[in-house]
Length: 141
Image (cartoon, rainbow, N blue to C red):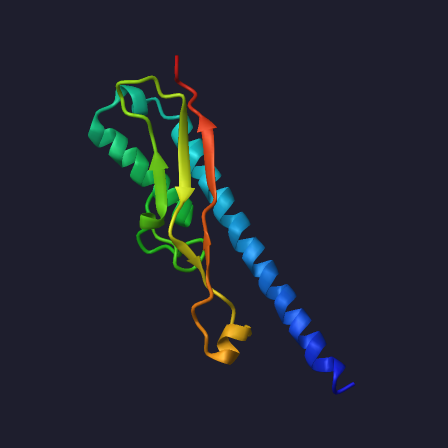
């Protein structure tokens, strides 16, 4: 029993950590879908000024980060996510916009407490998660 317990404990903790990793990735992927869907229904992307386009992009980034148009005083959906991690790709206004892309870049997954890196002191192990969504723009001609 004394030999089997540490192995079972390690398997349990590893399974829980992989579950947290998948949960975080899925949450980020759904958030990018929300941001892309928000932008895909905005006519101002083609008819508005650059200031209006920038304001829409900022609102979409806030939707991805915290789920609201304004993230002031709100908690991000996952720890460490900021609007700097949200990359919105729009074609320039001289071409017909056919799609919008929202992607998470530079977000590093935070490990749980019970990992081998914490026990061994090796903190160089990390995962960079990069989910993204491309959605057709609804007002293209």
